[in-house]
Image 1 (cartoon, rainbow, N blue to C red):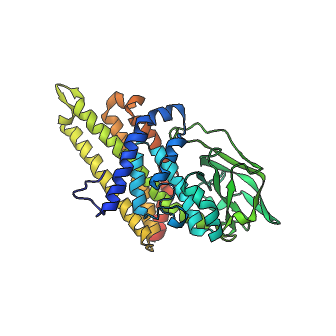
Image 2: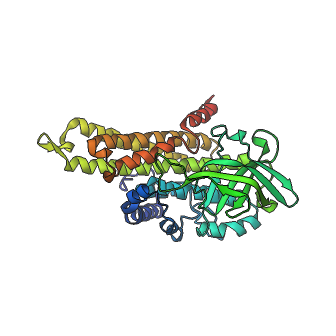
Image 3: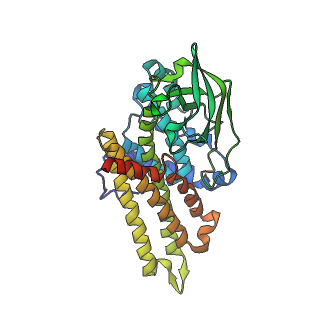
Length: 383
């Protein structure tokens, strides 16, 4: 991960301790079981909830509701370290944290006290519901509608590609309460078990197999109006604010997965022999490993810079979050794919663990805003 003797960022003692604690948890409680979870498509909720006493149920949520009130850089260190054990595991927790932060940041004090203690303790785990079958990158075109009816909203529509759908207890849902476009979007909290809320069958996916992904379906789903976060028409702003941090988190997950793949490649090159010497003695392969490590370190520095800007509320934080997400997820996938190549045919076998990392990291270039959308955000800020 980071050379503690010469870090690209001057991490303080607390941050180094957070990093070490998270990596130890990944090594002990995630990595030994990740291939089995992936093969069985098993969501290890018991292990996920073990992270709550470590402060990972509300990493950058305020302390009065059980949060850890850490920085975005701290969060990046945590998600990167957890992802060395399994990127899908780390990403699942990152989505919960994004949703919890949205409640902490934008909800009323009464709502914070009602919802967040159960979220930060992970008694409840939250899903983020923005994408729909007909609107992905064009998020402001969402169709799921919420109509006010007395003290309730009645929701109709479908959300697509929702992590934790059918399992998680809380759904942070972006709905249309007004005009077309971003100004007509609002945010509602919906509890599992609400009449009219149902879920599609689990999707069969290339990666992220340890976590369920499915549609969230609303059919005359009646939700109390008191579950509205902030005011009507503020939902798109809330959703986009959540995504700035979410992009850093998913970039950090890519760094961790790629770091694990790099370490596996280093070990394999030292052990595997060809033409009478170990692979690590071939200069061409040494250069490949050097390039992988260099690209990964460059991505790490950019992501940490973006996290620092988001912490400082810098005016260009959104641009840097988009840059970091694009670069870290592209680089992470490339490094993992190169690590597979260095393993030769063995890299293609499940037992070596590299092909799982490649499968898991591929989706990071798509979710939390595709990398094409990241380029649009960057260009919009430049021109």
